[in-house]
Length: 250
Image (cartoon, rainbow, N blue to C red; front, side, top):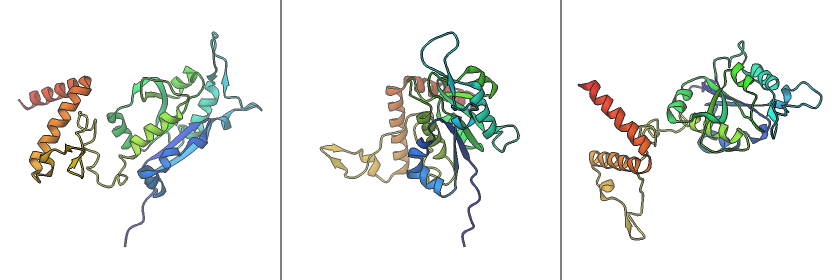
């Protein structure tokens, strides 16, 4: 008899002016299956519900002039306080504000968040969020790339997809993500499947050899070559890490 699944060990709270955008793609595939199975939980909150005037205003013109509007600090802080105040179960959650000014999202951050209790993500709109709310609420600004989106919702989906797939039981084989890009400091090696010969292009013979050590060596060399060619910045970090590791062994 299978023991009943306990409550989710990870949960996410989204603060957005467009709550209907969630779960979006997170309701599909592995993340959606895991959500339905209760392996993680998702709660979505409408920031406009925390406005206090009769028109439910959440933005105002920027001080000092300029185009566009800025999200008000009082409304945003009230929303965060309601979801993750000091007396709430979410008080210890990492609070994220997706922003092109933020620290780049990487696999190290993703792994770190996947081992924690959960995330609170405030999705900005307009010209952004009043800096006082970012400071007062201790929001971590995170960027998913050097470009600008219409709002933080798409970035929140990317962040959660990256985190949820690392949660226990979501991907099936626990070792399946350990060979992926960025997990080893390298980009992932090439992949091949049947047919062995396609449009005159053969798959590498070593992959059908059944010799696991040779296959592992080929994949390592292939990953190193791809990283060296495509991401010299990553290759330099990888080389430095290897150098430090060898020094530690001496």
